[in-house]
Image (cartoon, rainbow, N blue to C red; front, side, top):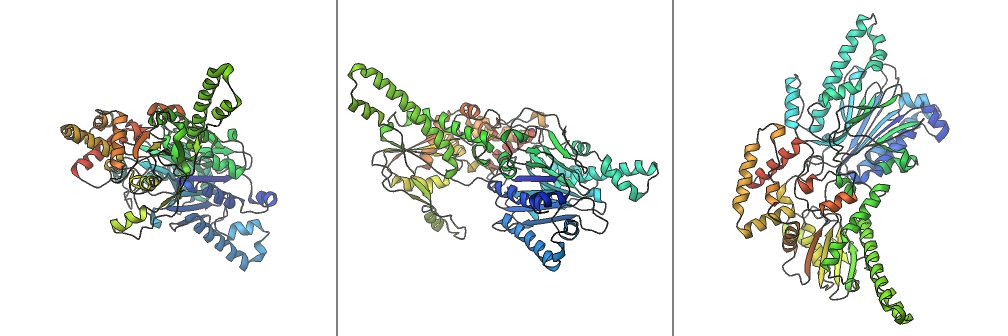
Amino acid sequence: MSDPIKHECGISLIRLLKPLEYYKEKYGTAFYGVNKMYLMMEKQHNRGQDGAGFASIKLDMNPGERYMSRVRSAQQQPIQDIFAQINDRVNSVLEKHPEFEDDVQAQKRNIPYIGELLMGHVRYGTFGKNSIESVHPFLRQNNWMHRNLIVAGNFNMTNVNELFGNLVELGQHPKEMADTITVMEKIGHFLDDAVAKIYKDIKKEGYNKREASPLIAKRLNVAKILRKSSKNWDGGYAMAGLLGHGDAFVFRDPAGIRPAYFYKDEEIVVVASERPAIQTVFNVPYNSVKELDPGHAIIIKKKGKVHLEEIIAPTERKACSFERIYFSRGSDQEIYQERKMLGKLVFPQILKAIDQDLAHTVFSYIPNTAETSFMGMVKEAQNYLNRKKEEQILSLGQNITREKLKKILEVRPRIEKVAIKDAKLRTFITQDSSRDDLVTHVYDISYGSVKPNDNLVIIDDSIVRGTTLKKSILKILDRLSPKKIVVVSSAPQIRYPDCYGIDMAKLEDFVAFKAALALHEERGTLSQVEAIYKKCLLQIGCKDAQVVNHVKEFYAPFTSDEVSQKIADILSPPDIKAKVDIIYQSIDSLHTACPKNLGDWYFTGDYPTPGGNKVVNKAFINFYEGKNERAY
């Protein structure tokens, strides 16, 4: 509970379809696109804290005039930092040349960042590399305008080593083995190849090199380049790219693991990781923002023509359910209802845990992101009580009195703001004893909110590691002297690594894994653990179709309730007075609540790509061999 989970990265792409003078006249500034990009990135700030980047391309610039700009930051407030840098550059030019104030073309020629094509990225690093070199967008430069490539994405590839090897076979020398660099170089290789072939054809037609340039831009087939580049990709991705001459694309993986949405009108094309960001920034209705289909790319040509094209045949849709539970902004119309449904569907388990005693139960939530599922849980408690009240009133019949009726109607769910996050733990405390002491003070409690011997029900989005729960939250909640503390996760038990973007890489980090291991130890079945390890070893080097997730066998002997009970035992501090129950959402209820996002591999082990099965088996090998390293 409240253990930090790394978010997904967020992408934004804006293409202005009118001349910059149009936006100056209508909106009062030629920096309309830059201003909108700032808002788009801020509205997706929940998706990235480690870094942010911005890039722009100016169309139809003369040779010798700068047409590409990029700025990145890995500072504590990266979005504010990069736009402060942009603002400083703009102001410095305008101070020297006040005559540019009303001259849009002069601004475009002389001020960086202003342009018709803009890209933004907010980043959460999954490999712990938070230096500026790891911040998107990435730039591949060339003197040929068409061969310049800017790439940013929300993704992880499971087969980086294989992709790196493919580049080496093509004769390239990539500067590092990172999935972003590898993907960009793969696209860049086929971009170079396409430009060279088009130029060769144009030359045969009698055009000189200068005349060839606009023809290359017109004939370049972006979809074909993406098909060749992505042939061997294994991962979840929403990939955005800008070409130096002005083409742009956003491409989504065939299982739809990572999200992407777009909106188009006569003024603008915008693509983003989240629908509400587009809705809010451009003030457009829900139905006007479309989801980019899995395996498809939205391609924007230099002349402004926009089309959707299938790049890879879509596979079974496995859109990430954690997007709905945790990552995406809860202001999305569908996500808001889904999170309420998650709270509603877990209520029967809560009712059983408190022996139907709602009169002596207080409901609350930690952290604030769990508020929506809390609302769904409480509403279902109200519905339950309403049914009970109806039964009581009908059973009294003619014997009902005003006093009895008032007593029945007064019963309602008891809701309190029990815990408040008081401060963020600072990482300069390195000694474990000092750190643990500080962790116990991260949250404060509302004294008097719970009566002694009441049940206390606390709901959260998910319980992954349980560290904060054990070291802080349960201890401070116990000060209220409840009879029982019921901790509820609106998500199922996280049992398996994610290799498509979320920073959940090691099996031994998951409290569900620790619980199952403890059950194996108690029941004397550790020989099964060794057998699973040997099966995982045999999978190394197998073809994709032959790889299966053997780690499922690790959990198979135990019911979900048995694992939950053992988790409660593990997370209960030794000196706690209240009884602790841990409740997790069921898989079936998750699918009911989020019917369009059935990607659940971290809960079920059902990975949507072969690379996922390879990763989970490697993670088990690492665990068994005591290697504290990632499996991808």
